Length: 99
Length: 99
Image 1 (tube, rainbow over the protein chains, first blue to last red):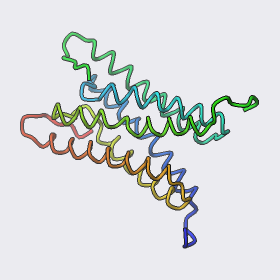
Image 2: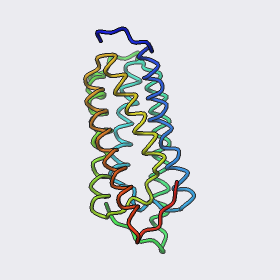
Image 3: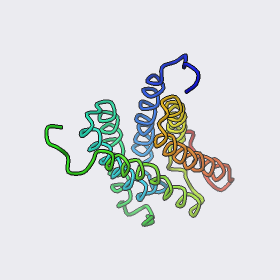
Image 4: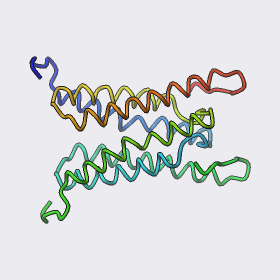
């Protein structure tokens, strides 16, 4: 903006992309270890995954390689969380809500 | 890429941004209703929220208003999820893991 930034905006962008991408890895590990994802909203996961598919299309059409890579990784991690949630939700011992 | 897109890339970008932003609302509602977020990883929330702060700085420095608005809303929703998780986790009836 008015003042010349000391750190390049791209640096913030790369740190931001890295953090919002790998943030889902601790959730994958937690769900895998505890074998439970009852409190994780399936509606959130479905909306987020659909949004990521749109980001992937957008990245392909605009040739935005960093956006493409970040969203493919985020997509894989969130599909993994959804898959684990559905697997563990089907086990007879747990009670599952539709939400 | 090679072929002219029938739908403008920006359209995909706006749909993508809208979905990956409002996706966290169902999680807020679910956590609020069930008063439980034990299965939601606190490490994920902290990393994601930190990443969103970097996106906000990036958006301000590059004057990217849509990126700024989307990330502020996502930030508010995720801080709400974290706050609810911490409140409900402190209640004596629930067992809490540090992860």
